[in-house]
Length: 477
Image (cartoon, rainbow, N blue to C red):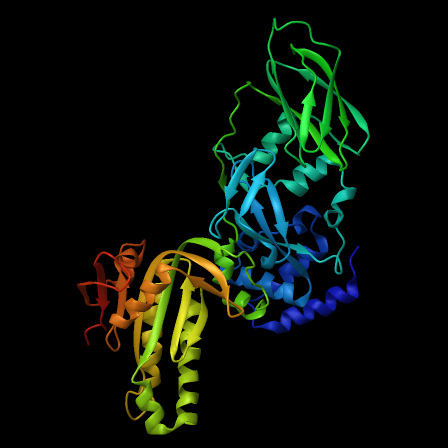
């Protein structure tokens, strides 16, 4: 069910959006035309890039531009770390919240943009219709294992938890309000877990030899998110559960055979995916999705972000010497060079304040490399001028922060931001100052090895203890 006219028009728009590497758009077109419904639902752009031998950054850009072109819809997912179930999904960051409850695990979580929040892409129904666009029409099996669960959660033996759960499932059906279903199970020693995948309604019956006589039928009532089973002793053998949905909403009810009554799910690890944190630090997202805001009053936590602050030394004198208009044009050129360096190293410019820039990065190594490139780019600007008009001061700090919407712009708030700004104030002209948290981060030592480094102690306003600051000078000529 492909709308050829819309598909072709939107692919042309995507092709023209930017200069892509060879065959990147054609690989996406092949996916849209020939992939299964499952492959077009909640696509992981990082996995796509790996499979198609595309640079990860370009893969993320590809799907963001494809969203703008109308080929895909973007979904923000809250994923349970214990069972890889998609607890909730949102089409907009505006509706995202960080406190969530998993019905399957009966657990509550506070999500950060680094963890549990992932971003995926689903083909637009205007371009190609897939069965997941109508979840209410899916079979119970399809709904649980292909719509709700993600294949990203993997057990220590390498098997996705969703596949292991399929092997445990003994019965699964959708039960409409006021209806009932007989679920027949051949029980073995261990336990039987009954679960409504739409609520907290659960039962757990141990299965043991010599437990007594198993009744031929075990009545179970579902109502208002609760499960009320009849009292029964279950022994190995055939048993039928008569499950009645007394509530007002449909139930998707399944019975799993667990190997033991005290069964614990194994700890899962997750394949690399596009986190909410990474997306907010992608310049393409910030450029094209400016209307996205965080509506949560408390903001959303970011556990690890590296911030770069820059400022021009002596810019006031520049405006006075060459005039406001000429100085403004030159300062904008400087901004473009800083933006280019930021994007080149997987960061995003959060905002500009006067002649200053604030940029955010997922890793300290990217931030330090970007800072070095910024300094070099500004030095190149000065080489075309009769005197050194641009002298850059740079500060870099790493820590936790809060992502918020301030003045209709996605921004960061908290002590990490304050420290990064104050570290920049410590820098002399042409100097990069980094904190201990950055200096000791992975891969940073190798990056700064060619540069003279001087260490100092600084007492920053609002920080109780003195901080170690590392001053990166230029390479010795």
